[in-house]
Amino acid sequence: MEKAGPAGPDSPTCLDEENDMTAQTDTPGTVTAVYKVSGMSCGHCEGAVSGEISELPGVSSVKAVASTGEVTVVSAAPLEEAAVRAAVDEAGFELVGTI
Image 1 (cartoon, rainbow, N blue to C red):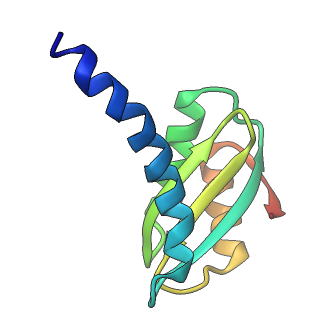
Image 2 (spheres, rainbow, N blue to C red):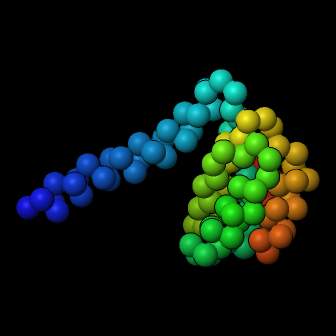
């Protein structure tokens, strides 16, 4: 029975965490940008893109979603698109642009 208890709260928590990332747009000192990346098809792809972008200076979090091609990046200041493009290229994918 104990296993069933935590499973219920985990689902809303996951949704809340996603919403929290969006809410960080309002956090002073952070900027949230959503990019469209083509070619991602799995979790490995998400990890490769996230790993490269997370190495950019000022980036505090990255969430890539292969099914939508969206990559949400929270950083201390706006990122130069050329730097994001280079990171995505390094991961082996193509930056389409911002959403």
